[in-house]
Image (cartoon, rainbow, N blue to C red; front, side, top):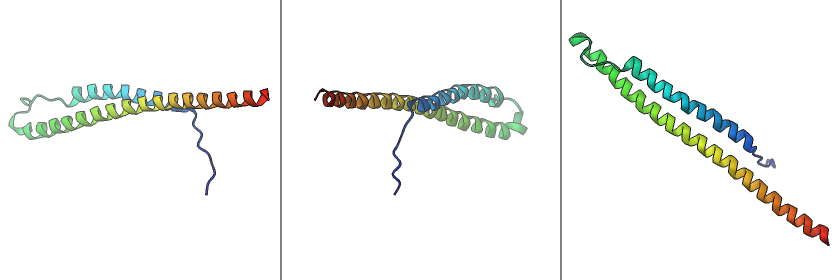
Length: 109
């Protein structure tokens, strides 16, 4: 059995949150890139390339959907990590204050 206690550094959670925010922000650049390079009008290519264009457009639709979901999940994860960091700070501070009060009472005796 392992007797290691769980220790959380709120600043580390904030650091991970900041990295996820950067990743989410970069996700919008990906969406712009996809639209620039894969959004082809169906009129281009005529009958010869119509099948290829349709496949590319289907891929674009899938990629846009996936990146939109990735952006949401990444942003939500960043927010949750930030909230967890704040919760650990508050909880740790509250426990420390309660412990300080018990020491003060013991010292008064």
